[in-house]
Amino acid sequence: MNIGILGAATVGQALARHLAAAGHHVTVANSRGPESLRDLAAQLGSRVTAGTVAEALDSPVVILGVPWTKVRDVLTPEIDWDRRVLVDATNIFTRYAPDFEVDDLGAESGSEIVARLAPSARVVKAFNTLPIERMFAPPPTDGLQRILFVAGDDADATAIVEQLIADMHLAPVSVGALGSGGRLMQLGGSLSGLELFGAGVARDEGEQRRPEG
Ligand SMILES: NC(=O)c1ccc[n+]([C@@H]2O[C@H](COP(=O)([O-])OP(=O)(O)OC[C@H]3O[C@@H](n4cnc5c(N)ncnc54)[C@H](OP(=O)(O)O)[C@@H]3O)[C@@H](O)[C@H]2O)c1
Image (cartoon, rainbow, N blue to C red; front, side, top):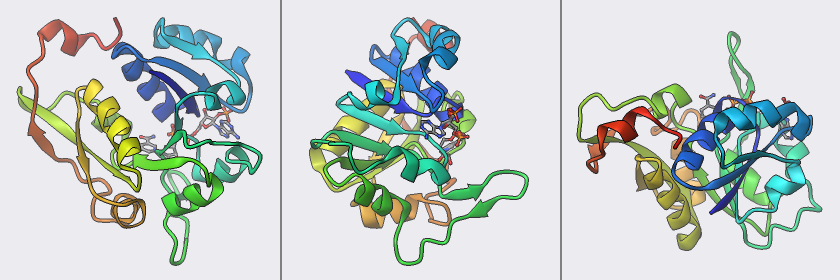
């Protein structure tokens, strides 16, 4: 599957690397243009391409991996999402370490705001509840898979993201609709930072050690 990733920092790089290792074709983009990402893309794998934001958006699945404070710059009203899947991996920080600050969204959740900014997209919340280094760390015991939560209103879109998670040897668990599930997953929600494991699928050792083929 072709996947666009907006943002090429910790989240964008890790997802690009692991999705490409699973056989997907990934276009990564940032605000500075493809030239700034060419070397990085080459390091992330042969199926990873540096692109413009427009090129990354031209994918059936687009992952939003930018700072929360930049979401409105990226999800501009002229984008026609045409029911493409938009995966919201953001956390609602307005400031990172050492002086963490979380946005006050009132009654709204971050993903509902994302869905409002991308009205014709099918928004799925995923990849935000654990630090990336935890998400892709080897499980504590052989035979376990790390659980990743998923929330969304469209069953087909949610299933697509669940499959991408499974492709990366993680275990997807759906936690319901974007509003209710997304609230549980966002900062301050009961699933934020929660690390759980389920029974995994057997993999050969070489595959576990080498994410990119
Ligand atoms: N780090 C984690 O472990 C983790 C885990 C789960 C979720 N998250 C969430 O995932 C998101 C990404 O986090 P991160 O740690 O990878 O890095 P980040 O510092 O939040 O994001 C930086 C990336 O976003 C790009 N970016 C900024 N403005 C942009 C724009 N207007 N258009 C396109 N790209 C733009 C930056 O590119 P430029 O260099 O061009 O500015 C850079 O590649 C955040 O919302 C974060 O809260 C992070």
